[in-house]
Image (cartoon, rainbow, N blue to C red; front, side, top):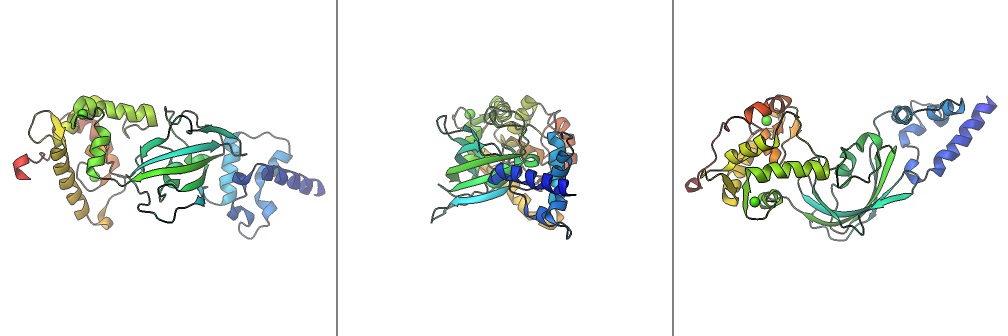
Length: 315
Ligand SMILES: [Ca+2]
Ligand SMILES: [Ca+2]
């Protein structure tokens, strides 16, 4: 018995050496009235000399916490005035320094330029998407993300982020938060900045989101080119094969009005409607993309939209 206690103490010290990010989560300290040491199975098994895989250690961490591990946010510094706390769909521009769980810096955007991306639309790992919410211009945060919320497809912007750390640690410096608007959304997709969206450009936009941010369609049968063409049909009221800001605004406003007329209590299960190219996945305009909508998308995109875009003289 004495031997086991010693092992526990020793390993406990090791854990603490791991730096602040490896602090034992609160629920672990007392689960169901047990003493703290009872709920550190990782250590005891290590003590028996059996090497564990990273995945096994993670599973035990979650089990010890009694619930799935969540991100930890340290509010390092906050400005006195906050004109806009970042919300889903907003465009955020920020710098980061990235650290391993034992505090070693392995990457930073300083020197290569900040990241500008849209929040809450699958452009980064879930933990960072969550941790950036509520940030203001110039605010500083330390965001610590457990493995479960750090999964992301490999992409250009995130290519240096380690893939097998139990915890990822980011020091974030928020530069600017741009509140979402229909105009900003249009400009984000207008890659060549010529005030029109074409089907080619929309296909390119979808491809760019995949390459740069690892974001893909929820249904792998969806083809970017087919989706781009459908998107144009969805918005192009005057039939000239491209979308201008007036056409885009008219259809977006029509859809948003329909969405807000669906009571929250009657919204089905599914993903929040994407404000970008994924807008066209919500076929019944209730603001939620259900599994059925996702599954039928590839086929629907081959045809014409059920609702015709508004004509200019109807505005
Ligand atoms: Ca364009
Ligand atoms: Ca829907």
